Image (cartoon, rainbow, N blue to C red; front, side, top):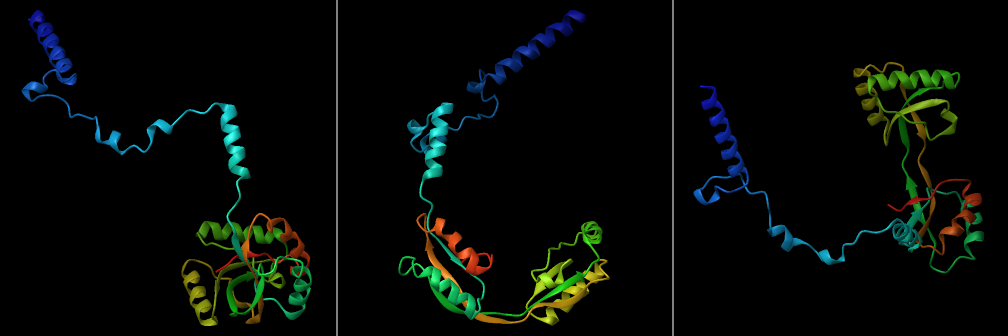
Length: 218
């Protein structure tokens, strides 16, 4: 009986080996073929692929870092007349056509606000509480509201009040709606094509801009 069991196991192992190696495909038995020869025809210039040595890789990375960056368009927020005048004095030495000013109206902004707080420790406690509630927050853009937290910005007081109500349903009960800034009218600086020749000169604008950031054009 034991010999019969051993013989059956040997036959089963042999049959599985023949099946797994595809020896029985002629009789319609065998594993699903995993090879996909059609992928070979889809390769794009496989002969161009090569393994780089460490030195070659460093040289390629250096060359990529030194490659010219594409020009980008940068713009400021609304600027008052005094700031525009100061900027013009600096920009007069820039290439013609590389800059211009255009009228801009920024709508009033309302926020759901928490604060002002007595100090950074109280702000840290409130931040921890908001994280537990899953409520996002950020520092207010108006320095007069610091130290405090903004739980969302809105273009109207009514929309801000709706946001406040929604946050109340999530467990936020000490926030209120405040106007972060009134409507602002002025001009914005537009640098339409800042390339590698102009990027080093952006530092010239920091003083007249009073550290206001330039952002990608919208």
